[in-house]
Amino acid sequence: MFTKIFGKKKLKEDKLANIFVNSTLQAVESGFSDVLGLIKDSPEFVQIPEIEEDNDSKFILIVIAANLKEIPKKLPAHQDNRIINLIITKLSGVFDVNFDKLEGILREYQSYLSRVNHPSNNNLYAMSKAVFFKYDLGKYQEDYFKNMNAPNPLFLKRLDEAMKLFMFNWEKTKTDYQLVE
Image 1 (cartoon, rainbow, N blue to C red):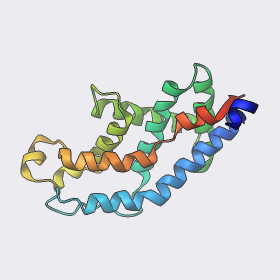
Image 2: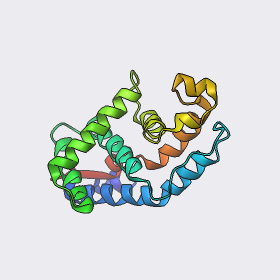
Image 3: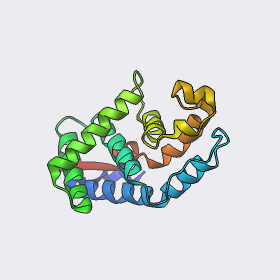
Image 4: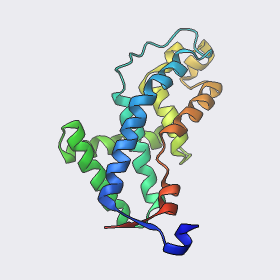
């Protein structure tokens, strides 16, 4: 109601990049153990997958890459590039790696997400499949799915639900805020 009277609250792109980085890293930090629990407790695996609690680096990159792929779908041209560059700049500081190297790694992960989920463009499903393949979960499945090197659809559906928690809410951001440079 207040947005109708006063207009949307202004949010600088730099501040949005901070919010994105902090909320995404917080979500991964607090949620990876739950995803790990979901994986290890899944009845579709005949053997409990061997993934350590501190082995979240692939997961972080999957989540960041998928969320960055969403930005051009949600924001106008040029603004999307500025925000993506701001996010990568901030992440390069967090991970203590130079911008170009991190950008290259994220582009590789984005390409990987596209390949494992082809022909679909749904990043949520791509995240689930990427987790499945990056953590080599196929070898823990029953022979039928192991031989096909494909995830059990029941497991994938459950993982899709969990991955929703790691997607940045661009729709709410656009509804609540007017993004300014």
